Amino acid sequence: MRSSLFYILLSAALFTACTIKPADPAKNAVNLSLKIERFDSSFFNIDTTHIAKGIHSLYQKHPLFSDDFFRLILMTNPLKDTVSIKAFYRSYLPIYKDSKKINAPSIVQQDLVSGLSRFHFYFPNYTMPSTIIYFIGPLEGYGNVITKQGIGVGLQMYLGANAPWYFSEQIQTIYPTYISRKFEPAYIPVVAIQNILDDFASSKAIGKNVLTNMIETGKRQYIIKSCLPKTADSLLWGYSNKQLKALRADENQIWAFIVNQKLMYSVAQRDVQDLMHDAAHNDYFGEDIPGDVGRYIGYQIVEAWMAKQTEKTRANLLTLLNMPAEQLFEEAKYKP
Image 1: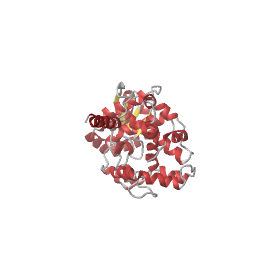
Image 2: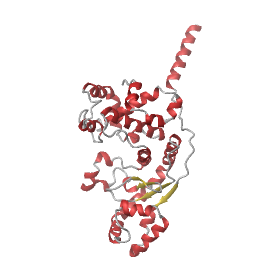
Image 3: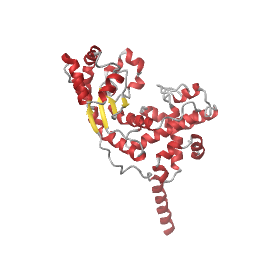
Image 4: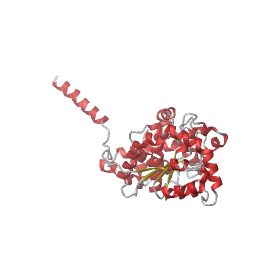
């Protein structure tokens, strides 16, 4: 009887040990103090009958971002081309009004602050932005930019997947539906972390083989997830739930195909693009698998490597970022 009871208790203990989640190193990260600037409101509240005076007032209120906005985002000289600025104002006033109804900044504020604070915890030597600047820019332009002042978020890119502005022939040419479906407010923190990470450390995958591309993008995906641990996988990946389900179900077959077709060490641009390029579906694996399936496989390899590390190493994401891709692959012993 005692031995049976011992066996049951031991089994329960083993089960509990296997299901305990790893400690969250950044759980107690101190929240950054971020200033919020509403350039969008300032711009669309200027008096267009006195446009030059309105531009002058913008420079006074937003001295750093105004120059970035006019010269880099609108790509115009605000002192010489008031006509095109007035035309932009008229065309985008309805978009600004729609963005006010959605109020994306209030939706994402908590996640944005938390994600950036956690990034600062993991990479304390990076100079974090002190300001989030919200603006309305061209639909063909930027949704998230790093400026001299902070992070600029273009709200015209976060009006909701079904916003009619994204379905014109011109915009669909630039942003087909598989991309524009990600133009939801909830993506703002994800894109912001991606942007900050790219600014902190440029990709080491350019010109390298398929395996390096997969692992380097997998590292970055792991870091984004570490900064936004409560964010849904569909948002972190930008995949639909259907695609995520298919990836999880077919991971073994996908990896077997990559190995058997000897794609891992290929440096051919065609092979890299076939596995890493964002697309509605993947030509190798069918309609339910996203074009950049290699990013998903790379993440699984990185996660296998991280599972073998000490708690101290798991807390040091700079070590992960600097780990040579092929060494990580050898140590990961990845087996889907």
